[in-house]
Amino acid sequence: DIVMTQTPLSLPVTPGEPASISCKSSQSLLDSGDGNTYLDWYLQKPGQSPQLLVYSLSYRASGVPDRFTGSGSGTDFTLKISRVEAEDVGVYYCMQRIDFPLTFGPGTRVEIK
Amino acid sequence: VQLVQSGAEVKKPGASVKVSCTASGYTFTNYYIHWVRQAPGQGLEWMGIIIPSGGSTTYAQRLKGRVTLTRDTSATTVYMELSSLRSEDTAVYYCARDRGGDENIFDYWGQGTLVTVSS
Image (cartoon, rainbow over all chains, first blue to last red):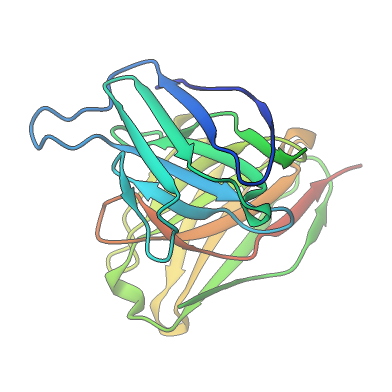
């Protein structure tokens, strides 16, 4: 199975300030055949089901604000929030889907300072 | 698009549980359905996928033999059955729609069903 790791596991943030979450995979998530990187980001807000934020490394899901940016390559990935807002609190998960079983990172809890 | 799951369950160790996920607002047979679970205070674990049109399934190896996904196309409902329950199976179980074909991107999620395994 592909192992996903995330750092930090907890991230206190100040509204209006930037934030960054790192995700690493135990194998490359780049499909050399089609050129896609099969790495997605989900946010689980308190008391809610997870929601899709970013797919295929860097494509924002419908309705996701442009302050969220996904980047990276191969086995190292980053989700950046340019200016954190109060509604961004929750647990952020990266997920690989290049191979079954689909696997998630442990999650990064973002909270307001 | 809505995925509405059945209510919370309490089961004894060794028993089985069957959770339903009823879809509406789209053509049921056009989109695959995944199941993901989350133990209390823990992260997300993918369990398996079912193709509603034909019923084909793929399961996480670690759950293989204990999990069964089925569907009823007339009721636009997918079922997740987990057998030989253990305390470690206590979790919130989510169904999630695959955005397109076999992309394995979850664009809509159910509200979750808490399954508690306790003697």
